[in-house]
Image (cartoon, rainbow, N blue to C red; front, side):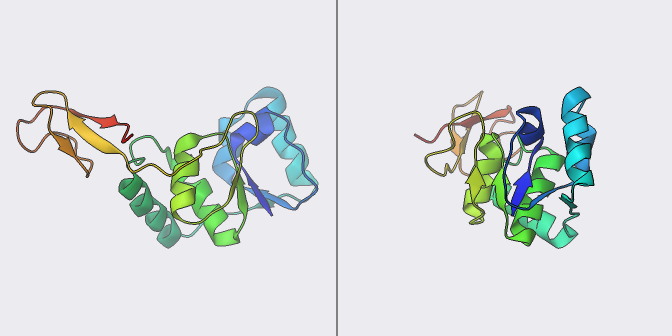
Length: 152
C-alpha cells in the first residue's frame, strides 16, 4: 500500500498498488490536485485517521531527530498513518522522510532525490554559540534563540 502526501497529487503520481491518504491532505490541495484526490477517493483510495497514540509516537521520533519544529500537523499524521497501515509513504518532504526512517517506515520520493542518511540535528545558540542535542525554545544558558544546525 502507498500512503500519499499532497506532493503525490500535485505531481500526478500513479501506482498500481492500493493507495491511502488522510483527510488533512485534501484540505491542503487546490485546483486539479484537489480533483485528483477526489477521483482517487472515488476509485477506492482508503482514507485513514491515525490514532492519537501513534501520532504521539511520531512526535517523539521527530523530537529525537530534531525535525519537530519543521513537521506540520498534517506531516505528523501522514507518518503516523503510514506506520499504522504498514504502508510506503510517498512524499518529497525531507523531514518526513527523516522521521519515517527513524520509525522504519519506507518512503518513495516523487520529483526530488530522497534522503541518503538519517540526520540527528543539533541546535546552536545564536548568542553564545553553544550547541545542544535537544531542541529548546531558547538557550538555557543565555536565553537567546536556538537554530537547527546540520550535524555533518
